Length: 78
Image 1 (cartoon, rainbow, N blue to C red):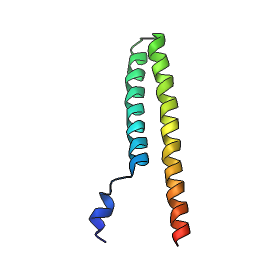
Image 2: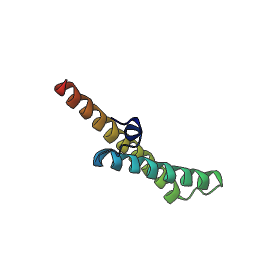
Image 3: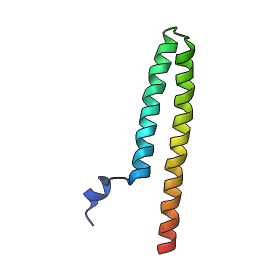
Image 4: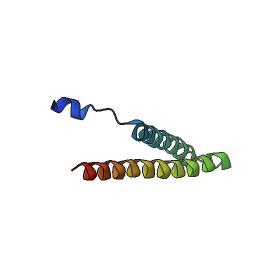
């Protein structure tokens, strides 16, 4: 096995989707936080910040579950 291929491995779809979701939620959180820090307390901005936090938590749980399932599969094959 080539060590380089291990570091450039593509995650399977649930992991890739969760990572994309985490990145999206992080970007939305940063944008909403900047708006709030600038004094924009529009309810839509506050709501987007809250929704981004919920999205981040959900995607983190998906990533955690895929890792647990991978570990269980490897344990069964060992």
